[in-house]
Structure formats: structure tokens, C-alpha cells
Amino acid sequence: MMAAIERLIALFEIEGQQAYIGEPVSQWSHASQAAEAALGAGASEAVILSALLHDIGHLQYQHSEKMGRYGVRGHERLGAYYLNTLGFSSVVAELVGLHVDAKRYRVAKDASYAGMLSPASKRTLAFQGGAMTPLECKGFESSPFFCEALQLRQFDEAAKRVQRPQKPLVQFEAILSNHLQAQRLDDRLLLDFHALGFAVLKRRLPADAMPLLREEISTLAAHKGPARWMTYFEQSVGGASMPCRIEYLLDDAPRLSELLEGPAWLNLASQCLGEPAVLFKEKINFKLPGGRGFKAHQDAPAFDLFGQSEHVTIMLSLDPSTLENGCLEVGQGSGRQRRLPQAADLTLDAQTEASLSWLPQPTDIGDVMIFDGFLPHRSGANQTNLPRRAIYATYAKAREGDHRETYFRRKRVEFPPEQERVPGRDYPGGVFNVGNPIR
Image (cartoon, rainbow, N blue to C red):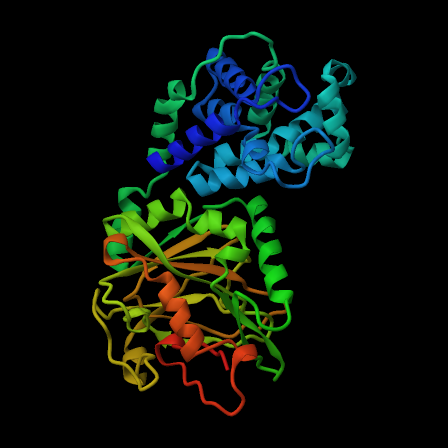
């Protein structure tokens, strides 16, 4: 929680005094004025915070593609994503993501509004798609945050007054802190996690955040030959070779790194572990059409390399997962926090697997599932014509050491990606290839 606020304070201190894209005020003056206007109007907490942070994308991503001399293209979408990684609610993030659409909507609906826009706002409108079409207007009106987005737009337009006194960010620290505190796992979900070994958080990230992640992942998957990241393949049900997973990719996927190492996910993992967490490993599972299933197993034996006592994995669905395309199934009835009998390949032995009740856990885009290292789980083949991609990030207790680099270095030696293997050498995998169909 405090890490997120500290990042915002540092960002505004470093970048907040730069000019606000063609307007006669600074970035911080504009943000502060918008938030004060929302406070004065008695707006909701979500609207106040979205007013304060609606242009955060210009500051955090200022080296991204520009709208000429007028700021970052798609800053509303990037800003919404960044707020998700910090742990803000989906409502605040979605309002930030809608503030440009609110401008386009008002231009379409009110000719006088377009005339009142500042010269800079008129220039950016051209980059942002211009006035909405009637069909786009109808879609925007159906948003559950339609009224709040228009309200936010009003505060945005009013926040360009020269010489207006501005509050320091510390003046907003209480509302920031209260909001971020409220996004932590509630007692019911924590009880589920400790009693069952897993908990599901519906729509933790909005669907609008997924394209940023999918784009990075697709770029890595399309690369041919050895790379810094590690791409593993499988043989599909039909016999074709296809990507099965990518690991060790944070250096080449900055948006994914922001999420997995950001305050939001670190806080989730820390709550479940009961103490500060550190990222241990990360991967993308593809489960493309025809992709095979994963054998029943627990993660604990596979992660038992560095004397760590406990692990927690956070899974994010990039696509819907169903029984037909191989969603996760969890085994219940084994008791908790213990290792179950294993076969020679470290998967569950047949008798143990048969003794468990297996419960499918279908998920929608943006859903998050958290599970511990002792939860038995498996998945079936993808029998559909669409992918079932998911991000998996595993965390350990920070006081037990940061072993991520060592883990991947050892894996690269003992079970390297196919492109890096020596012909004729056998790579059994062992703890680095438990339960999955990687060849």
C-alpha cells in the first residue's frame, strides 16, 4: 500500500512540474486542480482519485509513442493499466481509461463543447479518433461508469487555471491510503485461501488491460531461435509443434514486469504468505488449440530447491478458461499443507489422484486465481479452436531469499529450451518439468 503511494509521490515530484501538454499549467497543477474540483463537488472517492490520476499515463510512459508534441498516445489506457499494477480498484482504473472517450462523446453530442476545447485539446482530439460515431456513442452510454466518466471530464476541463494555488500530493495521502487499503483481500477470501488452498478474484483486471499484455507476449512468442527468455514447445494432440510456455521474460516484457513486481500483486502474495513476498518465477502458459493437458501434481515438490517453506502462485486469465479448453481443476479431500504420494515423475500417483474430488475452476478474462504450493491441480486438453492463455507468477517469502535468477539459471542448464539443446543429449527435466506436456 505505502509502496504504491511512494511511487506516485516520486513520479509527481520528478515529472509533475513539466508543462501539461500545450496548456499554461504544470502536470501537477492540472492534476491537483481536477481533484480539488471533484472534492468541492462532493464526488465519490473513485471520481476524486481518477481526477487526481487521470493523466498519470503521460508521466509514467513519457517515452512511449507521442501525439506529436501533445503527450503520450493512448495515455488513458496506459494510465489505467499502471493504476491496476499499483493496486487501485478497477473502478478508478476504468474511469481513467474512459476520460478520453468522454471527450469524444461530448464533442459528438454537443457542438458548443467542441468550441470550448483548448487548442491543445483540439489537437489531441484528432489523434484520439475525433468525435464518436453514433454507434460508439451508444456503446459508451452503456458503460456502467457513463455518468462518472462525464463528471470526470468536467473536472478535467476545469483544471487549467493559471496561478491557481495547488495542494501538495501529501494532502491526498489519506484518501489514497484508505482506497488502497480497501482493495486488499477481505477476510472471506483469505479464509477460502487458507482452508481450500485457493481463492478466485473475479475481474481483478479489466478486459481493456489485456491487449497490453497480449501484445508483449505475442511478440516474444513470434521470435524464432534462442533468446534471453525461454520458450518451450509441445506436440499438439494432432502432432503439430506449438509453443507451450514462455518463462524468464520480465526483462523483455515491461508491462508484465510492472504487474508481477508491482505493489498490487506483491501485496496479494504477501497477504497469503502472511509476510513480505518476493517473485520467485514467472511463466505464460499458452494452451493453444490442440494443446495437451497437464498431469495432476502439486507445485511444492517442483519448487523445493532453495529451502523455501512456502509458495503462492497468482494466475491471471488472458482468455476465458472452460472445461472444454482445459481450465484448471483443483483436487479436494487430501487435507491441507502436506505433500501427497508421488509417481516417479513427481506427479501424483494414480491412486491418490483417483481419491480426490476434482473441481473445475472456469475463469473469465481478467479473473485471478491464487493458490498455494500444496494444492493438487491438473488440466485437460484444449478441445476448442481458441487459445487459453494465462499468466502464472509464483512468490515466496522475502526473508527466505531472492532465488529467481538462480532458479532460471539452473533450469537453463538442466532443462534448456529446445533451441538451446545439444543434439543427442537427454534432458529429463526432473523438478523443472513436472506434469506439463513440454517435449
